[in-house]
Image (tube, rainbow, N blue to C red):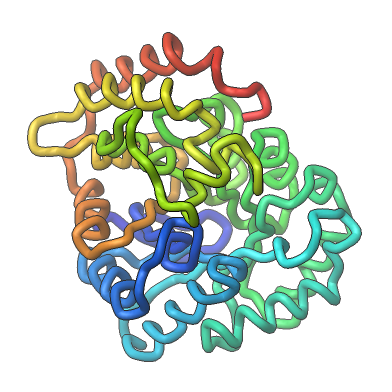
Length: 327
């Protein structure tokens, strides 16, 4: 698999990584052995980048990755985790003492002395403009608790604020054929600054897989049930902020753009990979088959200009006016 330079971090990561929210919580149950099998399938398919967070299953995702790293010390995996959601989302909770406590917990869960990358986990907007917060992050690097830091954001404005910080190594942002706004300013700015772009929610919570219909029912403990309207966290995290029924209609049209031999999900991932400035895309997987299929998207031939134009047209006609301006 193609390995891309990770901006200011140095080194390289696989252009298709693995998001591990599914292995922690909020997507239905995944057994421990099943989760480890998913990690192994991804690595065998060429993935070298795992993304997790300290709140995925209250640390379960990190712990599973830590176990895998102990069992496969030669796998060469770069692990990015996230912090900041363990307390109410108030700017005053983003302190050096809390950062130390959170990163100590993540280091223990992952079984490492130094975290490869820690990202602020979609903090309140004012955090991105706080000198004290970024000074604290610099201190974590100086103390060798973390090798580098970045941010995971909800909005383009937050991303641009983080990119302007000289110590920011990466920005993780929702980017997929149903969420094109980051391509206008964020991705070009990151590319110019040498900041890595991690594309998250790449399949719009599964909409772009083409597997669902308007009659699909998700489990009660799946965020696609309990957060469909932003009841628990930012609505943009679920179906990229697109209404489920209109998203299903758009997904049917998107599926028709898939080239022969590729699934709609692989087409969506290939589309993201082709965007200049994207470092890695992090689809999740609940089975080895999904992990392998996602990784295989990196090897597809580039989508032709006609397909890229069709994606833009689909967004303009069906979604641009319906996506909240915040996103």
